[in-house]
Length: 112
Length: 114
Image (cartoon, rainbow over all chains, first blue to last red; front, side):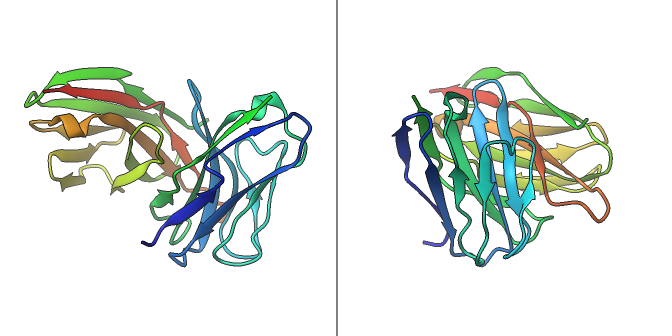
């Protein structure tokens, strides 16, 4: 089934550790996004990529980095995790930057 | 600053009791307004895109409408399986720097009782 695959589905991480959240899409979408969802704050954009080889900062980029080496993959890295990064992370993709985005199932991350 | 406000925060309906969810927005240069449905523990599922005032979209028991300041998601004769959180999001144009950023509202939690 075509769509977006995120891994892991959940993770408990010690503060200070490095972690990469994986995201793969098989829809050949040009644009990809990382959002975090927190109670009371809704979904907020962390980083985006309009096409392979390019990335940009969203609303809450501090402490996160991304890369887009090819069309399908868009990993999100936390260089040194902190408790405030405890959240549910959603990867999304869209055919172009102006069309609807489709979301993965999310990664629930707890930093302790 | 772009703002999206959804109301009510929560809505409880009896099966068959029609109602509407509201999404008010304050943005400059609206490119599109999106409605999503989110079930617990899952990612948002795309429902509709509306691009201009007066536009309407329908899917089964759902109908989305758009004015210059707000959008409504009308639910006709809802069923328990319509229970979910409904999110609206706006996308603004920023000339050459637009990157498809969606600004989401907080969502409306809909519960439909049998």
